[in-house]
Length: 168
Image (cartoon, rainbow, N blue to C red; front, side, top):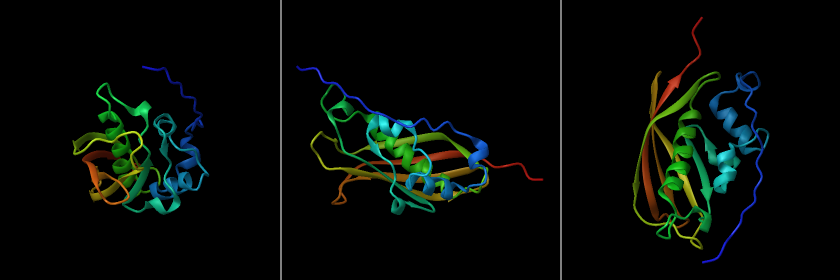
């Protein structure tokens, strides 16, 4: 057994609703992908790559992760919470990408099916989130973690509560 250390930095997003209230969800996520707005600090904490510009489309968002030892659980594979976090990011952002300016969301439920282990030294994986259906009050999406060959490691579904700006 040997000790390891890890140092990382992140940009505090200092969320300012006035700064982004005029951006649709898609515009907001595209600004993050272009580096114009900071990504969420959880991405730096987990070593997730922020979405690339091509990863952000209406109804579809992709995040990437290379499994590392600091992701491990006590039995020697990536902790299920890491799978859940990257999948929650992908599916919730897919829903966010469909929302108009001023609308917000929060995850009501997330269900994850774990299919195979992620291991340090294994391939980079993508968490791909895609919208199933969005109504005025809820959004449904599904996601999967896959490697470059399309091998699936986990599948998830989510329901998000949507809060839209008041009508005048």
